[in-house]
Image (tube, rainbow, N blue to C red; front, side, top):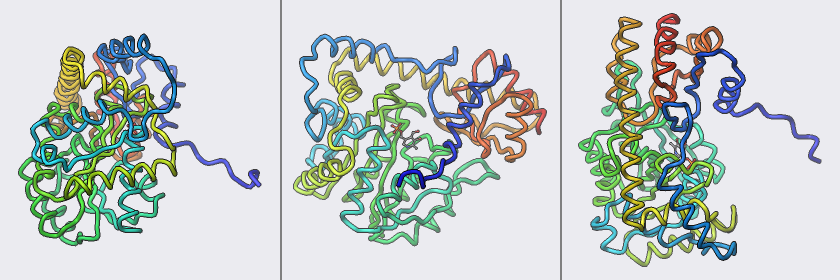
Length: 395
Ligand SMILES: Cc1ncc(COP(=O)(O)O)c(C=O)c1O
């Protein structure tokens, strides 16, 4: 039976990362996978995580299953982190959540809930969007329609086109938004634009589904959540898929949450019961390690403070790199790269052709995706010059 199955090609991004690892060029630059890397090219463990982990290892007395909805400190902490402790939706008891295996698990549970409420619902996704959105949500049975988002000419959001497309979203539809630090383009909505989206959601009745995997890596924890907080004040219902992979560096611990803003407390509780049944069908129980760490950090004043300080440093380094990359590229190419400084988070499209991206990899050992998406955090003092002169060479 099983020998009928053919070998599938490797995931294109992971395949490029493997090629970068195998490359022996002394100045190779790996800008492929979306993980944060420090000046030494290492994806570091937060000090706050190390401390929380040490305490938990000391205290642990069982490996019995977690409660099906996950750790309470984690769920409550994530709700406060996303909405702010004083948000009216929280005060009204309209928010509920379940722990999920990473942002991907959170997206999947959100999709299961959408499909339970409206089988085969149409999900509007930005053009472009993170490619994993399609298989993750699509495998549940949801359909897709895309809305125009990124304009390669201006390197910004084509908001007029986005609004024009989303005018066609109905009360039976879901619209997927990137909460901040858009992957892959780095171009985010302004708060004013989020306000227009909230108006449309109110008038047209579509369900906003916000994927927030980079809170704290754009402008700061509160600033990065401002759009989703505004939506949650205005719309009766929404779903949020949150991840701690990037902002706590818990990538391999698979730590995320599906969060519901419901019409009332009853509905918020019903949604959790639905999510638990959906999870039971897919992976049964949530993993413990990452969520216990995150829950401990978010509920302990001194760990929380330490984590926030580390995150501010990380965010500062990314924004410093954006400035440095812009400056170096402008000097080496004589072209305008101001957009790199305006974008948020770890990603940017350099605006190169696939052919130029291939040349960068093959001739200069600078690894980026064919779409010319780069991970800003892969650049450091040691490789920035090689990166900038290589880009100039292929341009
Ligand atoms: C846009 C977006 N959403 C969600 C995720 C989910 O991340 P994870 O499942 O690793 O928490 C990612 C990770 O790269 C992402 O870029």
